[in-house]
Image (cartoon, rainbow, N blue to C red):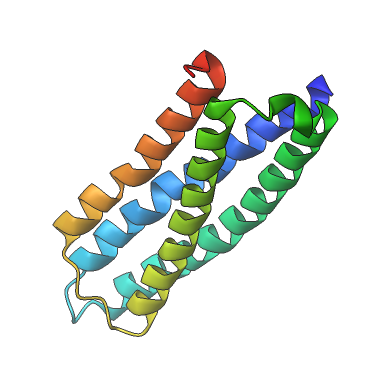
Length: 142
């Protein structure tokens, strides 16, 4: 079970690396001048590939997490409020991943209306989610 747990941690970290970097590409896309088609297309290609790759990492991380949860006995954690909070944050991270996909489609359709400053703030969401999840799993504060 420790091997499954180790690979779960690796895939979660890899998935979040994609969640950290994709909004950074959005910052750059929001700053591209309208006449710079080649730069825009290059950034869109990078963003699209990263989003697809991150989706695969997310699926593997979630499957391994489910395996760990079931392997340790899901009912054993029934009264663990830290686990409920962690699972809520995992759902939020999945939502953030899908929000990135919607934002990417807006860039592809030339429909983005948000500034690079907005994306700089948005970019911090993944850091906050990751930090909160790690603290909950490590410290188990409640």
